[in-house]
Length: 157
Image (cartoon, rainbow, N blue to C red; front, side, top):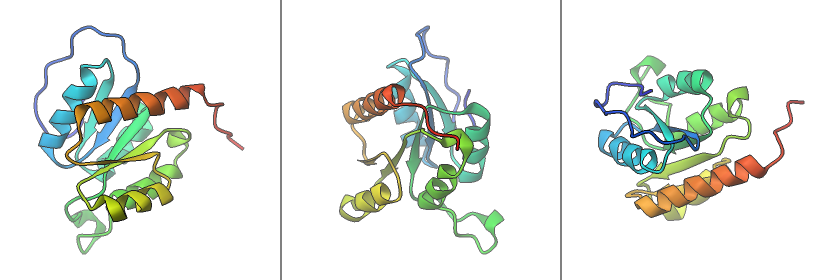
């Protein structure tokens, strides 16, 4: 299932789903690139171009992994047009029950020397710098899902 007004994609060929990945990025080219790279490896890929929409998708779909951009255009619904970026979303999602134990990977074109340490300190499982290589993307996703699936379930206490 695809969310947002991005583009029309034909369903993937019949493959077994290895996991459900949510991509949160406002750039349709990045969305399309990630979608096809992960779909071709057998993942079910969900898309969202807006943070508010993405939070609803997380609640409804309960993804196995989230790829989250840092930079988004100003959000007029916040009043004044700002305030919601990928770090805000990361902080918010980490408090959601639906995201307990779900790896969140920050994807960004920001300077990795500053963005990567900030992302990891904020609780991201990994940082990928744009443009993301297909091999780096699929390897990171596979490794994080393998770790998640072999870890004990998160505590609900």
